Image (cartoon, rainbow, N blue to C red; front, side, top):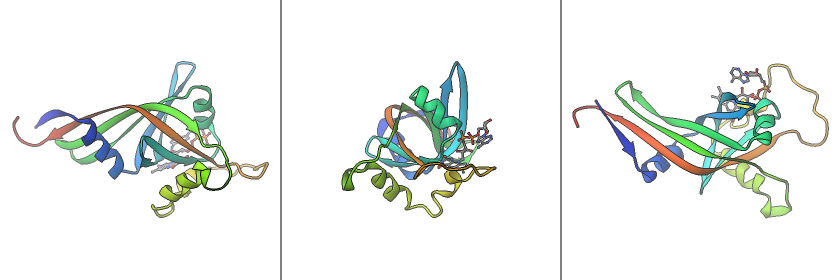
Length: 151
Ligand SMILES: Cc1cc2nc3c(=O)[nH]c(=O)nc-3n(C[C@H](O)[C@H](O)[C@H](O)COP(=O)(O)OP(=O)(O)OC[C@H]3O[C@@H](n4cnc5c(N)ncnc54)[C@H](O)[C@@H]3O)c2cc1C
């Protein structure tokens, strides 16, 4: 087995093909990491969530990292680390509403809203809509690939 660095295009292909990442955010020097679904469009990873700890933390510190990849075996895998910035999608009029764009690309996966829309203890929801659409604007991507055989 040998390891190789992946090019930006190779990283992009892995991120585009996947829909599940580990999202890390940080507050007061304490990291917090959770699995999350995403959809890539352009330079943005679009996500859906209910309010909670990760949203509170990303609102206070927008710098995040994500890790995603493809795993065939211990000796054959691809792993990409993305560094970027959290940006919450605001409501806007009509087609300019970026949340509709996020919805339209996330809904290509069946039951896309379920993991992000449920909590162990349902909470009282005040106001019209508690759910949050956000994107991570990608600043940097690095990737490593493990390949079978000799270099
Ligand atoms: C395959 C998969 C896909 C998912 N997709 C999404 C998605 O698209 N959007 C989304 O918002 N969520 C998704 N989730 C759920 C996500 O991982 C979080 O559990 C959820 O978003 C709640 O996070 P929170 O910060 O709002 O937690 P809160 O409800 O605010 O709870 C915070 C507390 O619960 C603990 N906690 C929260 N989540 C987890 C967890 N996953 N494992 C262990 N402890 C936890 C924290 O350590 C903390 O103490 C997915 C989970 C899985 C397994």
